Length: 173
Image (tube, rainbow, N blue to C red; front, top):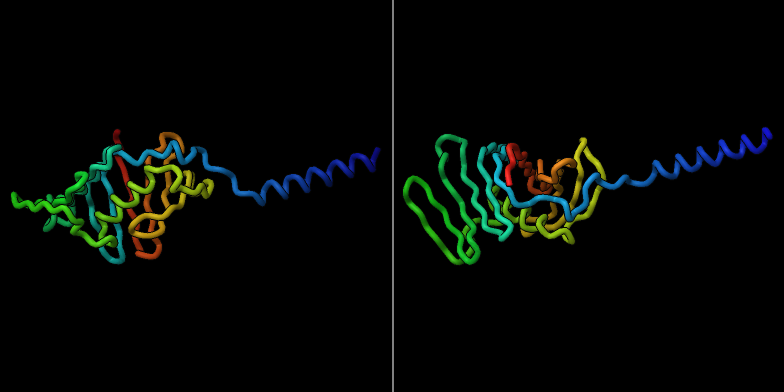
């Protein structure tokens, strides 16, 4: 009886050890990630800190409006299908070609949201900091997103290569 009990304990310990070596899946799936929303964002890129409002539709239309620093407040970058645009203090410009570099903060946000809107582009990295973590590739480079496990909204975008971080709050559909 002691041998059987000892054998069962060893098997239980081995099972727990093996189970702990595997990455736990996220609380949500890539299909549940919400990449179309309106929100406020705090962006840090290298030493720059920018506040902005972000809006993206399921069709891929998007706008990023700067709220801080004060000198740039109100500047708006827009993606409307075949056109891109910028407006500031009553002046506006539209073009058929993207005008922002892929490494600019607004382009990074829009490119990552576009990539994250396609579940096949996301790889589940399991839970991280109490959220679901996914990685993927966008036009701006490889990214990591942290997603609220209860509602699917993207809470944070990270691009380590570009020293970029965007933290979202106040998301609405």
